Length: 261
Image (cartoon, rainbow, N blue to C red; front, side, top):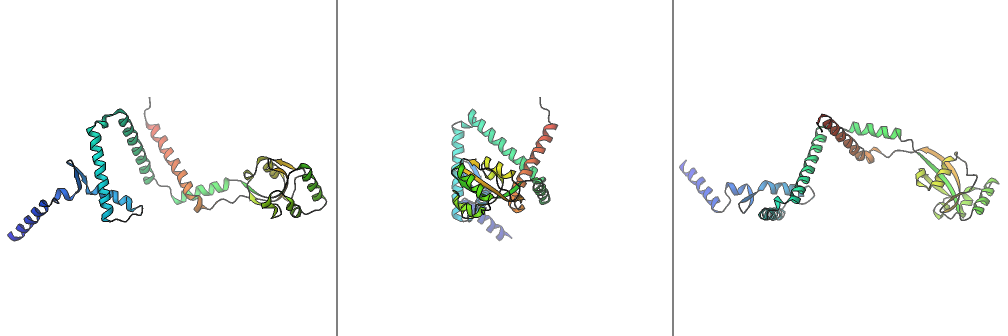
């Protein structure tokens, strides 16, 4: 028993002699008497490893050096009396407020999380209420109004729109017989969109339509309800909006309970 006690005492003295006793073991460093806890290094390293950095002795040494540098700057700021500077105090107070506000929001959303069911219900409501339409139109774009009128006359006499569209100044759609594919009205300039949405399926404008690009002859081929984007694509945005509403509700509730003079 005495032998074990003697060995333990000797080991303790040896560790202390090399500066790694109980006090040092829990600290990564001591800067001018101010300890930097090893737990602070662990916390810093954890945040870096979550970003993909490997936990290595080199990383830990770099983190330790960074924390020492920060502590030295803090001590120097105190030595210069900067912690009592009015502008510094204002910035510290603003940072404290921001941190606490974020903490309250995070706590509220952790205790009252947005569920998948809520996201799906909001998605269904938005998809049902959108009411937007997509139009599939063709056009022939020319430089002069007279030329557009001649094209309209040819169409009335039975000429095929797709053939006449090869003369269009819009090379992209000309190669496809004037086809502009499916689009919502806001895709087009206002005069074009207004003329297009007045057409019924299969109709062609009875007069040329002028825009900054020239003169258009427009035919509407089809109309359909706009398909909503998939839930997987818009789910994160919906969740953010629901979280915003939840925090707004919380703000209204605590304001209603507050005494504001």
